Image (tube, rainbow, N blue to C red; front, top):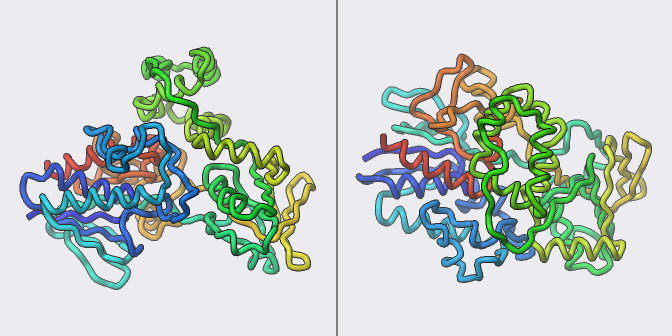
Length: 431
């Protein structure tokens, strides 16, 4: 019986387990190291608020690449519906239960994995409680790091009690009719605003980020178009400004142009090379994110309504300092603007570096693993998802899935990308 260890039991880790079991020709024993009480939740799907919707239609959320309608059928909804995110964790657990009933066993170890080292017969994983485990293969699916106050923002000791790093802060943590400041204007910030403004008609919110850009909205699906950029064009040195012009000139609906690049995004990212990747990250990444990762129409309608009513303000400003005065928080920006709120929620999104990860950080520091391009995640072989060390040598019995692969593959956080990675690893661990 093969023994497989999976470090991280969020959506990516559970999907890897499902695919390993589906591809198994003989019984397999899987151990998932995940300190949360429930598997399949992680940061993305741990919310229980029904107001927090998937940002992809039900028709695009199947966890199985070979069964594109699987999630929609499971949820019993229309293909164009945007389902509450809390339901997706239940869906993944159902998949895992079904797969393990047929092909092996899955053990959930509710503890952190703190080290991964070569063992006598494979890979040794040590848990935080001191226990040690031996596996034939190990998959690292550590997911996103928990939210943190950005390094560029100073917080006084007086302000700290009023600052939450839980972006899904419940509305009752504020006084009725209170004013909430949210650091960030992405999808996580939208979640925090939805929870408060829907349930308290007298509450108000200010969202602040350096660029002040909100995610764009989904529109009804249209007929897909061929890829508007080829990997060969980019590999031959196409400047980024010309690539951007090509996307803009592709038609009336930019969404079709962006979506046309989805299947080749990892190849396009690698074809850019180091200098153009750095240029993209500095000038275009945020634009890509808000156009690529969109809001459900009902959420976009709510956001527009609150902005027109004056209950929601969206500001572009570089916040540098949080202080407190008379039980309220004062936010100050580098350009001398300020805002006052009852509470502050940090919703700036996950960081790209793995330095704060208790498992991956030390492995990168000692050279066992190498940082990915631009310092994002860890460096992996694109074709096998095996991590490389600082000399460029791959670790043959180890694979990495999900957000830690973003440096190599760029798009590595949405379900369409994660399900492809999981399916690949599900096949490779049996080779």
